[in-house]
Image 1 (cartoon, helix red, strand yellow):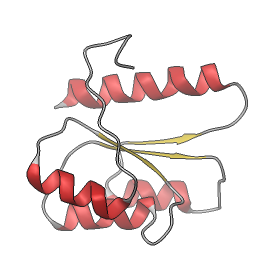
Image 2 (cartoon, helix red, strand yellow):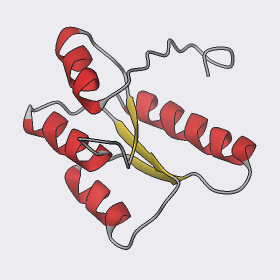
Image 3 (cartoon, one colour):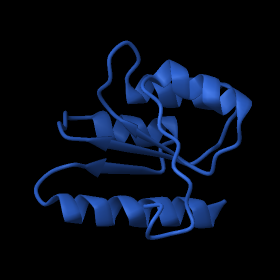
Length: 105
């Protein structure tokens, strides 16, 4: 994404680390996996929103469960992307979601 747009990407290894980074630095969008150890993507989203942070939030997942997509939107997610099939298609969907989220800001 850095090569194809005006983005600087910062990655972290956990939801807790993401919360720490968000408390110290400004970002345009959060992209999170749904399933992560200790704190999943929905818990991360819930915590970010409880702090009054309206940063655009995109959830990605390779495993879908009934209700998770709806739950993510009810918590304030901007996009929910399923990682299935062609990785190039997934990357295109993710790029579009990020671009849309950033444009809304």
